[in-house]
Length: 247
Image (cartoon, rainbow, N blue to C red; front, side):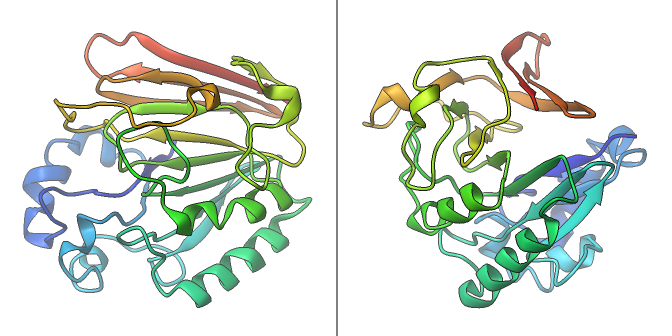
């Protein structure tokens, strides 16, 4: 079995329910009719009231803005970063930490996904609301943090709770062991249009393990305590980045 994760901005130009069939369900009919899809809300989905539009198209756990689910030996948590500031911040963060606490020791893998990026070398700014969650990611053994927003691909080297590259992982690698007290953040936001005038932001490029400015999707395969990730070009199928974690 497979699952699909949607990292926000599910429907362009905004999240109107009226656009869902033409812009999403028809183009992806052959995939969506066979594979469960778990979307998170993005800023374009918030151009209209998601409690009317988003909720019309999806039936998701919890309150549909933020929720979690399990698949085999992995735990997935979707959050709502709205327009760069957390939706219902106090309640969402409290729920998030409690969910992470409850997941400890029960799963081999924990994934957190949402729309906006934290620290980044893409053309997007750094969103404080995301960076403020770094201590939770590190404390509660989150393996991968996935976001969209920037229409490009960027994998950062493992961060600690302060958003600093971990001492033992300060060179770009494609294979890791169990990363204790840290996490890997990946921007994978080029499932649709590319930003033609893309220009990387001013940052410390030493935090970047891999980048690719092409339309793509990210494929993650899990077998027990091994994870294999590939970023794959939407046109041509070239592998743009690969990652292996062996716990």
